[in-house]
Length: 121
Image (tube, rainbow, N blue to C red; front, side, top):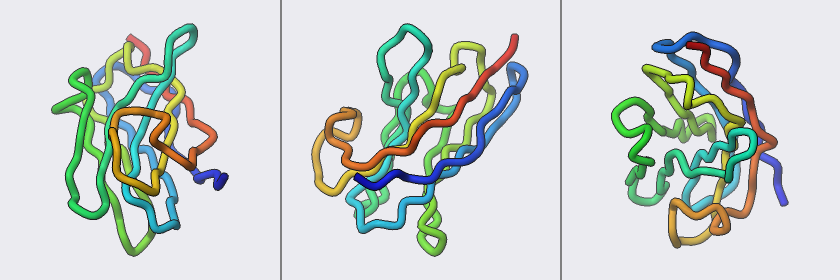
């Protein structure tokens, strides 16, 4: 398994913005962001299919978060705007080699180690 290098995150106030980055140098089919709050299951946030450019979002973040990719830098981003306290969680970058359900964690082969996002009210 390859561990993806993540950066970004931190402590912000409600309404602020943050951008997470993830270096994914492989020839992946797609990448995604998941998050996990203490005591809760890992939750799908957003996904990007590299071949088509299609994006998918959890309804809870749709319109506030945006996933994108810089091909030249092999980097995937998660721009998070209008952050809410309920967005607080450990955020994980994930990459998959094959097609499948973009919102299912088991479809992903390589993962980052996580980065903490805390949103205060």
